[in-house]
Amino acid sequence: MGDGMKKTGIGIVGCGNISGIYFENLCTVFQNVEVVACADLEAERVQAKLEKYPDVKAATLEEILADPSIEIVVNLTTPQGHFPVAMQAVEAGKSVHNEKPVVLTRDEGKQLLAAAEAKGVRVGSAPDTFMGGGIQTCRKLIDDGWIGQPIGAQAFMLCHGHESWHPDPEFYYKVGGGPMFDMGPYYVTALVSLLGSVRRVTGSTAMSFAERTITSEKKYGTQVEVEVPTHIAGVMDFASGAVGTITTSFDVWAAEVPCIEIFGTEGSLSVPDPNGFGGVPKIKRMGAKEWTELPLTHGYAENARGIGPADMASAIASGREHRANGKLAYHVLDIMHAFHDASDQGKHIELESTCERPAAMPVGLLKGMLD
Image 1 (cartoon, rainbow, N blue to C red):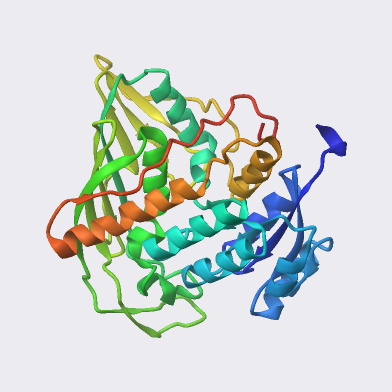
Image 2 (cartoon, one colour):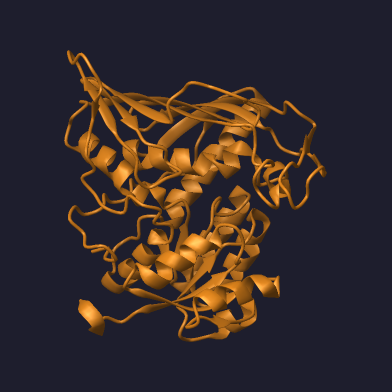
């Protein structure tokens, strides 16, 4: 495609903690996109970006939505901002890629997807980590039959919360936060991309601490009231017949557990951390004495955040489905809510939503390319 290719214009809304890696990749790595403008409620955050990326211009949200050269809005606001900003983008005729979770409630998710369909635009959502070399290698191993038919999976995300390092950690303990809505998307999205959709779930939740104390520098000593469950254990029945378990917690000081393991009829697969793009997949086939570390079959093993919106741009150009798509994101949101609902209601929840497994990434892509 080379220099003559048309670049898809991107507007970034939200220049906070996570935005740095998006700017870096969307401005310097992916060749099919161009960051036109960025907006944030705090002017100095925008200024910091312009100093680093002088080709990007400062804008308000309204200016981004009115700019005909911007086709995709990348929405990096806090979870409460995901729905209102995305709806405005869609109403303005723009495709939108939200940080995770895609929105807070199922109702918001349905509204957003319906509005996008009516407008003929696309919705995408983080995480796009499943498109990285680590999980794509595992996807290829499963698809190629290395562990036989998958029958089970387990996933763990255990830590003691983010208030020790994050400069503004309050939202992690408010509605839309908690370990399942914050970190669960990485794990559940990875599992759905590897094993397909989930048909029913159950779960149990707990709120172990009523208050948390911030120990990161900016707000050291501030008390935060906890509004959401902070320890969640869930069970997933996949449509394929596999049964998975997941535990996410902000209440655990230490644990010796894997990130994700997939169990098959002919062997087991250890999947790298789904919050990253690379890592080392390991396999132990039946009869083998040891686990074997496997080389990655796919690129994008470094922090490639922004690959989702770049893939969306590529998909718009060719007419295919983008991988980190709204149906996948909504199904993941539905699953996460269902764990909490199951605990509150004391029963299994049959899921209404479903989705296709996102297409596997091609092998042998040049860096900066997606097709």
